[in-house]
Amino acid sequence: MSRLIIVSNRVSPPVGEGQANQGGLAVALSSALRETNGIWFGWSGNEIEQFTGQINMARAGGVTSATIDLEPQDIDEYYNGFANRTLWPLFHDRTDLAEFERTFAGGYERVNARFAETMLPLITPDDLVWVHDYHLIPLGSELRQRDVKNRIGFFLHTPWPVARLLLSLPHHRQLVEALFDYDLLGFQCQAWLDSFLEYVRDQFPEAQIDAKGNIRVGGRDVRVVSCPIGIDAKEFIAGANSAEAAKAGQAMLKSLDGRSLIIGVDRLDYSKGLEQRFHGYERLLLDHPDYQETVSLLQIAPPSRADVVSYQDIRKQLDALSGHINGEFATVHWVPLRYVNRGYDRTSLAGMFRIARVGLVTPLRDGMNLVAKEYVAAQDPEDPGVLILSKFAGAAEQMQSALLVNPFSPEELSDALAQALSMPLEERKARWQPLRESVEREDVHCWLRCFLKALSGKGADVISFDEARHQGKNKQDAEHPEGIEARSFA
Ligand code: ADP
Ligand code: F6P
View 1 (spheres, rainbow, N blue to C red):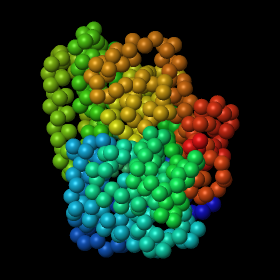
View 2 (view 1 turned 30 degrees about the vertical axis):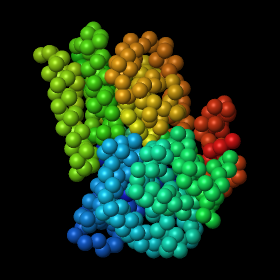
View 3 (view 1 turned 90 degrees about the horizontal axis):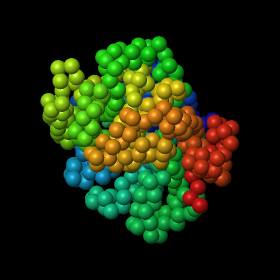
View 4 (view 1 turned 60 degrees about the horizontal axis):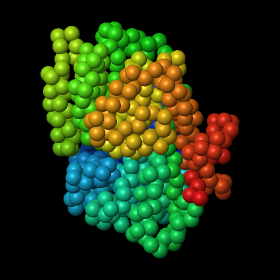
């Protein structure tokens, strides 16, 4: 098997070594890297006065990491700027928050070129190179310009926006042309892939797109696949069943004093719909006063991207709104909303998920959403809770038996909460069972094999996770998806 080089903006220490880890990408890659014994290249997260291109190699948890430090201007223009003030809001349908500044675009190009130049000596001819996420779209193209002939794949962890929104980005064609330099493009779900193809058809009418998702454009062949990321289900379930998780769950139960717990766990990001979620909960307490003093919402939201103004703003709004809700409804014995801005270790989180009657996962837009999968994995099969999931999360394509909601509507959120809180055990089990099966079957290892099989270019016939499930393929195939390569467009 070829050696794998994974490249992402941020390189975190591998999970499973006691650290809290706060990003879906980091969590998934740690599992993936342990499996493949690969190299993980990216930004250390550290600042250096002037960029040197020096690589810091380290080995931990079975993974070799190769990191570089970036200078302040790089961090401002590339990470805080083009990645998180331009592309992130645009890709999450927030053109109102997107800022289009030439300096950001310049910094983005410069840092992608720096990544390419620095990692070049690490690449040997048989390596597979796998680039992750919106920070690094031009990296494949930068590597090609340096004569890298290896197979290079790109996976987008965020949504891909509809074409008419992407048109608001200056030089949008240039960004997409850079994607054509990859051999394989992976999206989290069919909806994002469809948006991408809609854009390509519209802007590159000369492109030939076949039924298997092969695009021929500008003399290059690119393949596109829908390949949903999963969690390390086995590990998470084991964590949820552990004594440590039970301890965290018991401590929480004690503090609830017989009340039902609704739980939300998200990075503090405007795309997660926390404001709307709080309004939905407020609506529940107003429309169903019986729930006052009998439920509690725990929202865990560690701060994220704190140098970006829109993140500072959402934090202020949530501080005010949580204070308002507690001021409106709290009694001397009951705090309706526990709003916590810090990270927790995964086992404690699993323990809290397990005892929560409702998992409230309502992003306004989300590439996938791993919290939804973790909540499902953590449940007690004899007494599972109910997942309320946004229709606008990539995870909704796989998790149809959750209570699917429009996260923009407080009434819909309130109705779903009331339904979940009063749902009989039989219905809870019936809804949870298929969710648990898909979370286990379509886990992070399945995602990894699906993408790498397609990237290594082996096998001709393609089939998606989704098709395998819908065709009722036998369980053996689903559990050993080596044969699954990529999605069919037929
Ligand atoms: P995103 O990648 O946008 O942050 P995901 O839901 O896909 O969103 O992934 C978030 C990951 O971060 C999940 O694995 C979740 O458990 C973890 N996480 C989120 N908040 C916390 C927290 N407060 N403490 C520990 N882990 C967290
Ligand atoms: O899942 C999207 C993502 O941007 C990941 O790439 C990243 O690991 C996570 O969110 C956390 O974001 P950041 O690295 O900006 O803290």
